[in-house]
Amino acid sequence: MTNDVGTNAEDLIRDLCEARERELTLFTDLSDEQLLGSKEHFLEPPIWEAGHVGWFQEYWILRSLGTAKPILNHGDTIYDSFNVSYKLRWDHDFPTRDETLDYLQTVLDRSIDRLDGLNGRVPDENDRYFYWLSTQHEYMHSENLCMVRQTLGYPRPKFEESPIAHDATFIPKDVEIPGGTFQLGAQKGDPFVFDNEKWAHDVEIKPFRIANAAVTNAEFLRFVEAGGYGVRRFWGKHGSEWRRREGATHPMFWRQSNGSWVQKHFDQERGLKPQDPVTHINWYEARAYCAWAGRRLPTEAEWEVAASGYEKRRFPWGNEAPTMEHANLDFNHVSVVDVGAYPEGDSVFGCRQMIGNVWEWTDSKLEGYPEFTPDPYQEYSEPYFGQKPVLRGGGFASRSKMIRNTWRNFFMRHRRNIVAGFRTCALS
Figure 1 (cartoon, one colour):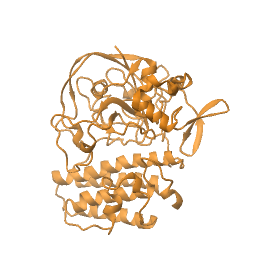
Figure 2 (spheres, helix red, strand yellow):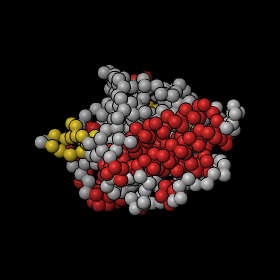
Figure 3 (cartoon, one colour):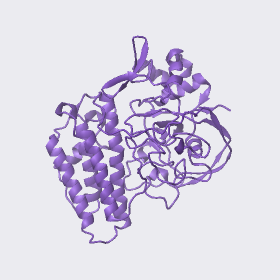
Figure 4 (spheres, one colour):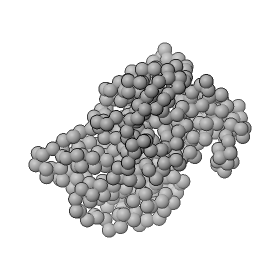
């Protein structure tokens, strides 16, 4: 694993091809029936997912950087995610599997040929930006396709598992974070970052205490078995409306079987692992647990200072790019692992797994930073300002070349099929 983004043509091609290889591994073993799948809220058919990453690459590299005409006659009306709603993504006359794979390869080949045509010259800033954008976008969609497979109960993706770095001495507890002035956001001169990370600016942090680990299955199970889903005061007005509408009484992929709790993992069920972080939790569920436990979610500024330290590390452990000893990323286990694993990834304050394993909800809504201006991909974040809570840290399917302490993910409050959990802060 490495987080370094390349600047020359060879590096850009390498990353583009590796991202495509990962996407195809998640796509090509599915049956023709599975490529469309059942219609679900906030989900895409896998056949749309695959075609969309090709269309995005074609749009931003071949068409925006040049004068190429669209390769597919109706590609824009099928794959433009901002203008084609979730509800309509099953209703298209999609290219076949083979046609989709041919399209993906054609776009990739032409993107590579464009760099090869530089004849040894270093790609300029504009070139680098759009190649990085396309690669990082495909990183995000490989994670999304993994989520689609989980939601639809498809087989576990075919990636080899790596050894887990355990720590038998780990004890979950609160750690003290001192107050001070913190630079929230990405620093100018950083490698590729998205517009909503720009730029670092001073925020005042009051002293607080935060858990050194995410909430576990065992901890959340106590909330479930205490009847927490049925106590209105834990949920608030909108959370109660969501809970009533969904009929939710436990996390999405849990169920009781012969007196024990089991959890769905792709197309299999397995016993609930007590020390794994609770996952597939939405923002309402995280907040309700906090209300029951007498805790709260961190703000994103609190989360980032706990991860970065006031010295502003790029990753919790420092500025060294992620390795398999630091974090559960890159599908290394195709699952979450226990909250005590990966001691080499601790932050300066002793917070574990702030990068990788499970995305973490914060109590902050996505807003632009003081110097925000939209990047060319204007639909990426600005349309969602004030609407969606921020998640931080990345999950087991997040790519190591994408993630960093300043990365801001965001989803609607009621989304519960994402690999999302949370850690908590003391009230005072």
